[in-house]
Amino acid sequence: MPGRPQSEELDRAILDAALDALSEVGFEALSIADVARRAQTTPPAIYRRFVGKTQMLLAALEHDLLTIPDAEADHGSLRADLEWWVRSIFEALSPRRTRILASLGFQARTNPEPLALFSATIDRLGASHWATIIRRAADRGELTRTDIPGVIGKVPGALAIQFALLHVCARDDGMIAELVETVMLPVLLAAAGPDGPARPQPHP
Image (cartoon, rainbow, N blue to C red; front, side, top):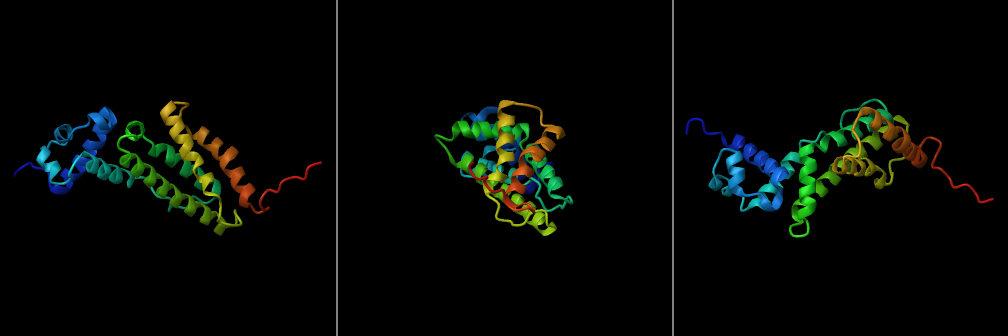
């Protein structure tokens, strides 16, 4: 049919429309008919791809999260890698993703699957990026080992979510540099810096 989007284009249009609808009206109010209207297609075209809106949203979330950049680029130092990584985390939590996260959190009691996928994907990507940065720092001699507690790598994501949901402050380069300089680097160097892990001082 002339003018009809090709299958891959329509797939992307449906997934993008689903995320737009989710961010604007929330999970409960979202309908296949609304997504079809936004994607300029029909409900049967969506039902040929997905059995329902949960499966459609799971596919849309997975597709969207795969667009988050990886950590393969070497920025030359642990500090530069950390600044790039923290910045990418804040940038990844776009206004649309922030609204989606809030919506999924609200809906989790009755339908936890979308939030679980969102959280698991973010954790997997974060762990992979973290491992790459730590391994590279060890290869440069900036860190003496790679078995760094994973909880340290969760700090930027937790702060990004807090800032985004509560509108705590603007996410600028100065704040990112301060987070790296006063939190991330000191903790990493204390745990595995060239001078070795920090040792508790004896009680007087």
